[in-house]
Length: 84
Image 1 (spheres, rainbow, N blue to C red):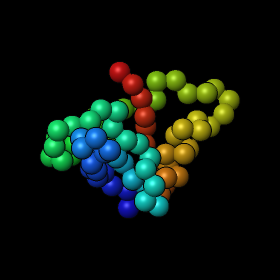
Image 2: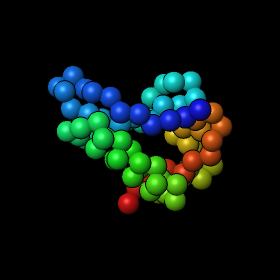
Image 3: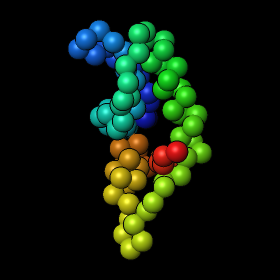
């Protein structure tokens, strides 16, 4: 089952990552946090916001390779990815 977790990076800061059904990282935070709790709070914010996100541009004639990859990594879970 896909899940978010938090990990300590090489400089002692915390980051979140989204793990696919196979345990591989699908996404990671672009910024670091001072505590495990703050990293998990940021992951929760991403989860909440991403549930309503849309892909900002999709290829007209082909399946979106990013969406296909994410769907495969999440074990068939449909997601929409986008930016502000």
